[in-house]
Amino acid sequence: MSELAPSMASQGHGFVRKGLNSVVEKFFKHVELPLIRRGLDFASLGATSGFAVPFFSVDGEETWARTKISYVQYGTGPRMWAQVIEPMQEEDVQGVVVFTHGGGFVATDAPVYMHSLDHLVRRGFVVVGVEFPLAPDAPFPICEFAILQAIQLISKTWSAACSGPYGLVLLGESAGGSLALTLAARLTNPACLEELKQAGKRAGLPASTLEAANGPLPSVTSVVSLSGMLSRRLCVGADAMSTAFRALFRWYEPTGQELATFEDLLEKGLVKKMPRTMLGCGSDDFLVQHSVRTAKLMQQQALPVQLEIYKNCSHGFTSFATIISSTSGLWLPQAKQFAVDFLAFATDSPKMALKTRPFCSWSQRLRCLIRDVRCVILLSSVASFITVGNSSLFLMLVYLARKLLARMQLSLTTGTNSSLQHKVRRWVADSLAVGSAPSIVSRLALFGASMGKTGSH
Image 1 (cartoon, rainbow, N blue to C red):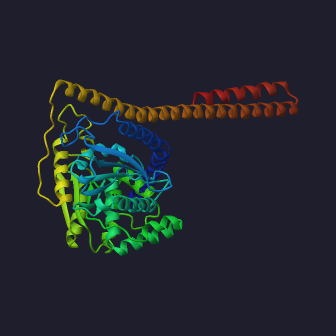
Image 2: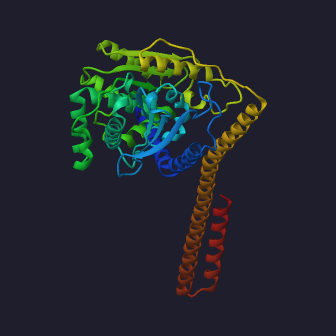
Image 3: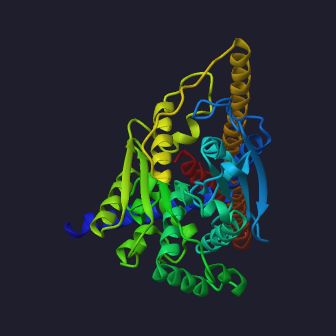
């Protein structure tokens, strides 16, 4: 028994932990996630409207300088549109970057990130930020088919650019980094594409959706994954981070059986070739070990890969490096370095330093400061919306819990009183049946004494 006791105790703790994780996951899915989405929609609106676009880009020029912005619809379903940033002059176009945003497959929008990519437009790229259907409403493989549909439209609309010197480049961050690598493998390896088609059929997707994987597909020149969620090994562990990743991957790929990540395809031996591949990650990012492991797996299979680790940088450092433009920023030097590395890699040319950030006049400093205040207001509003929303819901739950407890106590009291009244009536009836007044008094006295003992306990 003593040997079994620890095992039984650990099983009990495991059941408790599993139950708590289930409650936390459901709360996040039905309460927190909608709040986060609404807050990020607000941030996306601010970025799209220009209310909180950083004054300077990572290359030192004003955001959206010498660019034009438009939007295209690539499908009829929800979130099937893209934001397009192009050079002002068509003759300047040398290639296309298709960007897939992060957000754990469940949140955010492309416009939140696009300010960190506009410097690519001034160097000859058309940058297309693709929106795609989000889990858990649209689990795998819906988003991959949607992005394939977007890539087909992009390759037709900007066919000359895709055939230019820089070609078609897939770029993604976080969950988008995983999608970029996976789709590059699908577009390069027939076996990977066939696996996607079969997954679509198993999911019961309509023929119109599956059509995105048929017909002539464009070739990818290079692919870049920044802080990519590349592995299901993120889900292994009992810590809060692993629990969160388990929820995200379960919402994204509910069966747990499909080859939904780039690492899945690698380990199954389906990836025989890849376009030139660059993996980037911050040294302080919780995903850095998985980027290193993926790079090693690719090297073992003689696949072209370049790994770049950015010192003292956390997850999403490139997106936040220029949010506050009037100061140099903690991550700005490494964000600039990533821009240098990306441009050298995507254009297959030597690395060239980006320009330093200029402050030419006091009026420019003032404009920069005003825009920073806008960014702070927007970020504070989003953070407050999510925090206050969660706090309000928490207080509401506490209030409801207190009301439920009060009702339970009232029910218990009422039930107890009813039981006591029943006992009194029964004892009185018994005494009357005997016909002795003293017996009634004695029984009531005994009853009062017993209640006194019960109350003292």
